[in-house]
Image 1 (cartoon, helix red, strand yellow):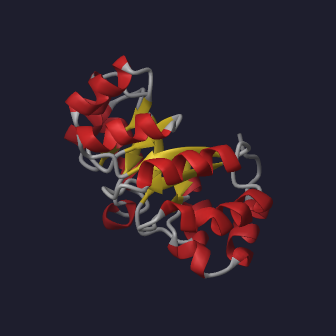
Image 2: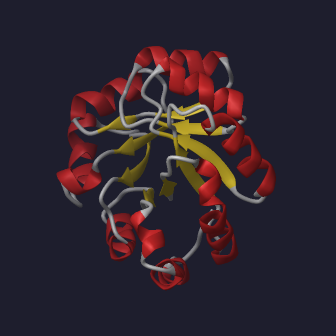
Length: 189
C-alpha cells in the first residue's frame, strides 16, 4: 500500500484503518516539505506494528530524508545505481523500480533481491512471466505496483509476480475492497 499526502501526519487515520484490517507494509510517499521528516517520525512511532517504508525515492535528498525519518526500507520508481549504493552503505533496503528486460537484468546484476515492476498497469499482467525464459532464472522477487486495483491482486499473483502494491486510491473506496482482498489471499508472509 502506498499513501500520498502533502502532510504525512494527515495519514494517521488511514494508517490506523489499514492496521486494523491486517495490512503489514505501508509506504509513505516522500515529499520535499519541511514537515515530512517530523511527521513521518511520529507516524513510525504511532504505528509500531506496521512496517512503514518511504516511497518515491528518486534522489539523494529523498533518500537522506527517508533515513533521517527512520524508515526501515524505501521504494523507488526508478533503477538508480548511485541510490542503491548509498542505501546499501546505510544498511537501508531500497527497492528499485523496473519495467524493461534491461532494467530487470541491471537490477539483478546490481544484486537487488527485490524489484518493483512499475507501472505494472502499463505493461500488463503477463509481462513478468514473459521475462522469465529470456532473462533466465533467478529473477528478483517482484512487487507489481502502479495503477492496480483490489480486483487485480489475485490475478497478478497467479500470473507470476510475488506481491502486489495498491495505491492510496484504495483508501478512498473504504475498507471493504481491501478486507475482501486480504480474506481471499491464501497465505500472507
